[in-house]
Each structure stands twice: as C-alpha cells, then as structure tokens.
Length: 149
Image 1 (cartoon, one colour):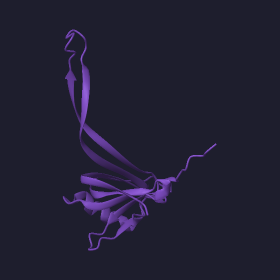
Image 2: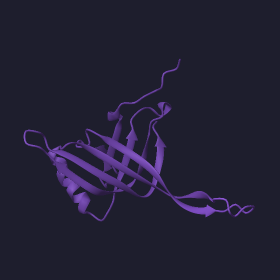
Image 3: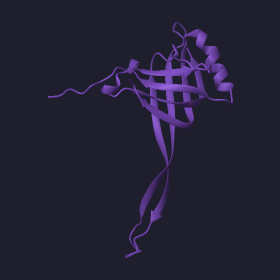
Image 4: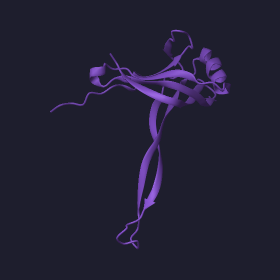
C-alpha cells in the first residue's frame, strides 16, 4: 500500500509583493486561518445539431477561452496589516502575489505568481472575541506556475 503524500493547510501561503526591485514576497500574518486558491476557466458554448437528424437534441460544445485565479484568505486580524488591505482594496492598481504550496517540488510543491486586485475586505468581530479579517484577491493577467526547487 502506498500512502498519499499530503500537506497541511498552513502550507498554503499567500505572499504579497512589496513592489521593490527586486521584489520581495512575504506571507501576510492576517491570513492565518482559512485560505484557498481557485484556478478557473471561462468558456464559450455553442449548440451543435445532428446533421443526419435535425430533430435530435443538439449537444453543447464548450471551448476554453480564458483563465483566472481567485484567492480567499481569512484569519484573526494582525492589526498592522489593516492599512495594507484597506489601501489595496481602494487602489486601482494590482499587487504582485505568489500563492505557494510550501512543499518540495518533488512532492508536488510550487507556486502561482501574477498580479491580483483586492476586491473584497471584510472585518468582523463579536464581543469578547478577536477581530477577524477576510479578503478576496482576483488575478488580472497571466498566472505562471513554478515548481518549488
């Protein structure tokens, strides 16, 4: 029996670039709870009829036409991070990010890199509890996957 090679949820890191040259990427402390990355394809679809029997139902044929990525991140707010996310949510410009599966490349690790907009910022809290933060980042332009060294 061969067991699956697995990783822990904390090994998904959302690293935000500092805009420098060279650019430095750091995992944001506020994304310390749930985190996810979704790569999605946009499609066009056409209904293709049966030429031999036009009375039959046609089949939908789909063609991939675009790709995009979405990051969801949440956790207990590290209060110094609030200014970064608040400014990013207001900014028209994107920030370079890396979404890392932090395991060796031989075990399937790597990262997606590209520019992302912060499109949603939610701060919440209850009496007697910590303030939580939730952010949504959406890609703009190409995302490149690089295998970890």
